[in-house]
Length: 368
Image 1 (cartoon, one colour):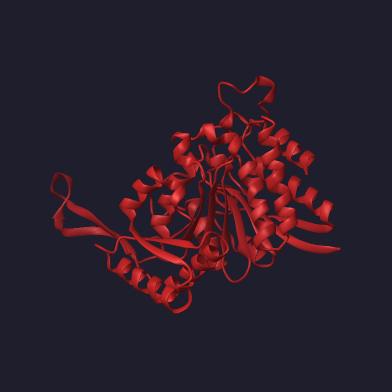
Image 2: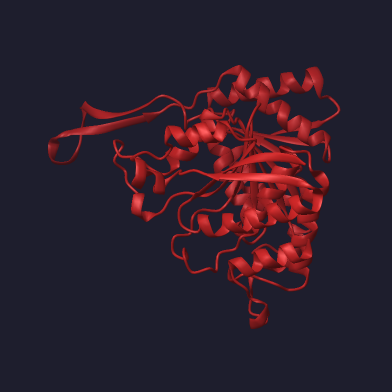
């Protein structure tokens, strides 16, 4: 029997609840297709800070590197919120594992499930046909550039004391842009053949380099793919006014962080959106939403984004496209039958169709 090793990172908040449903579906697909999955848990985020004093213990990174794929749930919560640069934050675990696994590409599909079209705040005619792939660069840009905060003798702060000064550097190397551009063009070739490259080339030198390299890659090897440039502020507007016109959107780290969350809201719920972080080795899969500490432990969290992350894992790490299609069809059927968790229910949803976290996982397994 074919076998794969999965590193599970439940994290914080609702993470342990939803990852349990992802594993439930993973095992059901494995049983159906004759594939065994061996899962090992490790700590990341706030729970790792509590136990080990840091958001990404060395043992967690080693466990991730030793696996065939990583399935992460969510990290963070108000318990660990701080602006003290000397104290650990849960988000450092995410940045650290992406860097440690050399995951430079984040794929976030934005698709409309017909049964949930009414959940979007946009008009039905605006979201009709939305099928967008966000391709975000993960290891460069301002999140990983040089930074410092210090007291500046030249700038007065409150009460005449020296004021603080801080800077963060948005920095890119040519090879980092080249490889993410290739990922976007390859994705477009498998889809509708169009790439929209997002930058701020009218202001930022790093964006001017971004645009030059993206065009060089396109002109050398991908002239069969349509390429357009768009400034990030205009893109934020166009995502709301004409989301169905976009196919593959590629951008740097911080712009991608912001725009992918905006694009996610087109669907009406972050609870439905999965993502994949890819490099040249072990890949990581996670929902697009956060840890939702306000509902943690209540058994009402939506596990579908976690389950759809399993779909992406089967597709991108294990070439199990039939199993991935099974999950997509099962989720679609569950929604078409009217089953909802509280976050995607509306006033017309019958009370007996609103289910909890475990029950939603059971329904997906049943439909497999």
